[in-house]
Amino acid sequence: MIPEEKILHGIPVAPGIAIGRAYVCAALGTIRTEQREIPLHEVATEIERFLRAVEESKRQLITLREQVAKELDEKHAEIYTPQLALLDDADLIDATVETIRSEQKNAEYLFARRINEFLDQLRKLDDGFLVGRETDFQDVAWRVLNNLGRQQHATHATFGPDTVLVGHDLLPSQSANLLKEHVVGLALEKGGPTSHTAIIAKATEIPTVVGVEGIMQVVREGAPVIVDGVAGKVILFPSQETYARYLARQSEFQQLERELEELRDLAAETLDGYSITLRANIEFPEEISHIKLHGARGVGLFRTEFIFLNRERLPNEEEQYQIYKQVAERVFPDTVIFRTLDVGGDKFFAASARPRELNPFMGLRAVRLCLKHEEIFRPQLRAMLRANALGNAKILIPMISGVEEFRQVKQLISTVIEELRGEGYQIDHSVEIGAMVEIPSAAILADELARECDFFSIGTNDLIQYTLAVDRGNSSVAYLYEPLHLSVLRLLRMTVKAAEDAGIKVSVCGEAAADPLYALILAGLGVHELSMSAVNVPAVKRVMRAVTLQELRALVEEIFNASTISERKSVLKTFLDFLVRERGVPAGEILSASIAHLE
Ligand code: PEP
Ligand code: MG
Image (cartoon, rainbow, N blue to C red; front, side):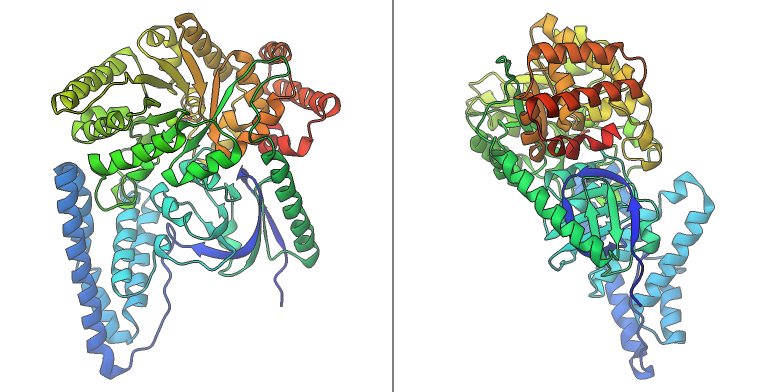
């Protein structure tokens, strides 16, 4: 019997329509393996095979621990210790051996079953610390299963064409790899629109819906699935009629994209000649070609942490230098803004390296971690400074909370420049150093901070999260995540004003900049530059070219005068109607990026 069509709703994060088959990522859920009977005469060999895989796993973990100790420090290396202890745990290893003997089934199946029993117990305990240990169990399980010859970890899986990944959530270190494969769509049970998995999905232009509650209960491996990244729907087992409708929508969407691409070489300029620079956010150097394709001017935010994730050892100065140099050269004469390492929050060096912090988003993240670990920070700064041979690079510091922190960074950069010069490097160009304004304290102190910085870049993803106390990756509070909240708008206005008074440039590089209608508000507020996933550049450019600066200023005034969020949304809707009616802007292209915002 053909299963009935099921429509599930979530949050759209990367536009487009994907039609394919589900690959269920058990990555953060239960570990699944196939069950096989083992003939009695092969039981001893099966036990030996299992113990060999355990030994190999131990060896790998010890090497990893040594590498991290060398590259980072002993403290971080310690994250592998609990996993090593698990591999010596009689309750896990001896118990598995015992069941292979008594039940005569394959090692993968029995080991995974034992791990799942542990996981079930942990989940029942409802103890924050122990629950955090899930990752240890899962990492150990993947490692042993991989060493048994079964490619368990979705990170390493090979996907057929038209694969739609369906999962609970992906860690950024996993998604970074996943999205390099031929995957056409992504549907996740968890996550908010600005979680880092969502950002990666958007960068790689894969239609994505997150926060799809209940999908893991109904999805089946290989099930036909449609991801509607425009409306935020996931359709499992689509009927023939739905399938045909979506095929048509898919080609309409592609046609629209082609039309937008025609704007590639035109300026982002209002009808009365006010121009604003649209740049691209990137996570990997491979994305540079996308930038040019979509007509963005250089890179407004290079999230360099992504080159640190998902590797066994951290990239050294030389490796980083090669990457930064390549990016700077390829975008020249446009600018590239290198953001220094922003790990912590929902990004960790390795899937298993999740620190034991109760509040990682408020913990040792970004510049805080860098200032504490100069052995990581210095090589990165050196690499960035060396990569600025053409003078088109700037350095951006994330998570600045106040003046002292920024001064500390500037001091360190001056020392590093002297050091490089002393070693004979030619550091000719003075490099601009900017602060991200993404913590409310930085926005409140923007006037003080503006005197210290060469430029501001407002990170709305975090600014909204911290202002409204809404975890950006948590789908259950996603309804509260509101860029149109008056508090957020006021902080934006304060920051822009402070930048103006100090005569420095201000850009916005959070996802809000990618929403064409929100981008109009930002331009009306006086923001000079917007940086976004390259795919969103054409739609923003399209609306910018359809308005005058005066109209934008009036729009901003109306937005600030409205007293509720829904009133602000209706101001935007009215403005959109005007654009469609009077200026011939096709509604579809704007709504595809703005719809979540207006509904
Ligand atoms: C932001 O916070 O808005 C931002 C651009 O940085 P990230 O999303 O990497 O935290
Ligand atoms: Mg941020």
